[in-house]
Each structure stands twice: as structure tokens, then as C-alpha cells.
Length: 240
Image 1 (cartoon, rainbow, N blue to C red):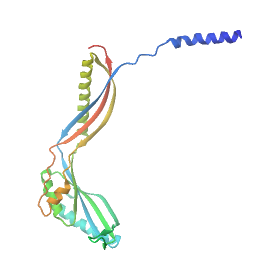
Image 2 (image 1 turned 90 degrees about the horizontal axis):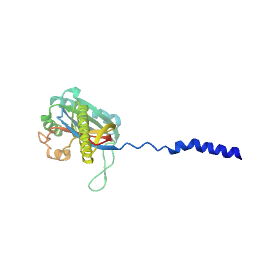
Image 3 (image 1 turned 120 degrees about the vertical axis):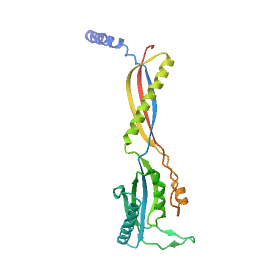
């Protein structure tokens, strides 16, 4: 019995210093989310078109599409677009879905459809409307969309990130000054995504206006805007 009591007292005496120690105080921090923007002039435009054909067999639909695509390529190159600036995005052959007439009855159509989606890249931004108008005037292809882009995609994102860091530091310094403290070490950087923002024109309206027109009223954006977010965490130091 005496041995058990002595062992218990010894265990308590060893644990006492550990129990007496207070946990280290947590260093106060300032956490801020910064937002940045950057604007760069676009370098090119990409127009997407579809060459669509129909036939009663897969082979016939594919062959008809090949012939139509060759005409389209010749027409586009005739407008001054280089062959290497025209790429296939997608090609598919599928069963033609049922179509109903005004009376609600099914209309007889070819059994198979072939769609060849092409992407046309042009650096003549002022001529995008003319090129789109020529495409709409052609019976071999359907205008799908247009988008503008940069050769140096990473530059826009990097500039936006730099601006986001500056914005975060500015906010943190304001908070620190208002609280009567100063910023200590930078503890964390949490990267947010940098994304381009580009308003797109209403292509459906343009297509309706451009039937038989020589040009589509497409106004290229003066710049493409990139946005980025970043979260920075600083130690909170004493009075400045």
C-alpha cells in the first residue's frame, strides 16, 4: 500500500511542472484579401464556324462534308486568311434528330448529319466584322462565335497578381495604422485564380442583322481585362 502511494506521489510530482506551464501565446495577425486588375490589348480574334451536311448514310454524309469543307477552306483563304490559321476543332457524324413540321407531323430528313467545326484565327482585328460577314454570306458554313485573345496570356495574369499583392498590402497598412500597430513578418500567401474578363457581343443579334450584309458590326475590345485575388497574412507587431 505504501509503495502504491509513493508511486502516485512521484507521478504527480513529475507531472506538476508540465501542468504548470502555460501554452505559448498566439501571435496576433492581420489577414487581408487583395484584388488586382490588368488590361492588355488583344492580339488576335478567333472565329468558330460549322460546316454541316446531311445524307442517308454515314459515308455519304462524311463525303459531302469533306467536299463542302474544301470549298469553305478555299473561300476563307481567298479572304486573306492563311491555311495554318484554320484548324479543326471537332468533327462528328450522328443520326439526324426527328424534325416536326408546322402541322406537328414528322418531316422526312436525311438519316445522318455531319458537322465539321473550324476555328479561324485572324490578327486583322479591324477586319473581323468583314470576315464574319463573308462567312454569313456563305451557304456552306454557319457562324458560331468570336472571341479575342492574347499571345502572352501569362503576362495579363502576372500583372493582375502583382496589383492584387499591392492592394492587399495597402489595406493591411490602413488596418494596422487605424489599430495603432505595425505590420510584422509576412506569414502566408494564398494564391487566387487570375482570369481574363472579356465581354462577348451578342452573336445572335449580329447574325440576324447580317443576312446578306457585307460586314457584321463587331467592335473588338480595346483591351482584355484580367483579375486576380490573393490572401496575405502578416504578424501584428507593436506600435509603429
